[in-house]
Length: 112
Image 1 (cartoon, rainbow, N blue to C red):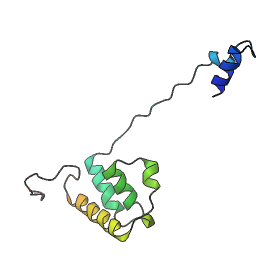
Image 2 (cartoon, rainbow, N blue to C red):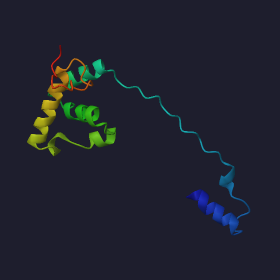
Image 3 (cartoon, rainbow, N blue to C red):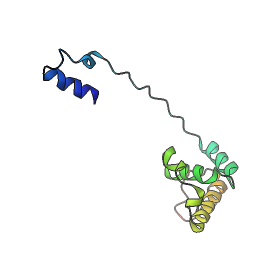
Image 4 (cartoon, one colour):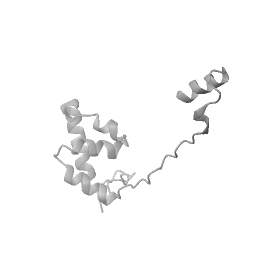
C-alpha cells in the first residue's frame, strides 16, 4: 500500500522518485514439513484418548484441517452425538494395525 502511494506520488511529480522502488523484499523461508508415520499417529491417537487433546488431534488427523481451524473448535462446541461419533472413530482408528490403510473392500475390516 505504501509502495502504491509513493509510486503515484512520483508519477504525479509530488516527489522526485519512489524510494521504495529500490528496496528488495526479503524472501520467505519455507519450512520443510514433517509428517508423522502411521505408527506415530496411531500412538498419538492412543495416548490422547480421553484427554483435552483427543478432539483436536482426531480432527486434524482425519479432516486435514489447519491448526487455527482445529484449535478454534472447542469440545463444548460439539453436541453429545458429535462427541460420541468422534470417540467411536478414534477407538476404531486405534484398533487398526495401520489406521491410515483403508478397510478391506470386501467388507472384512478385521486384521488377519
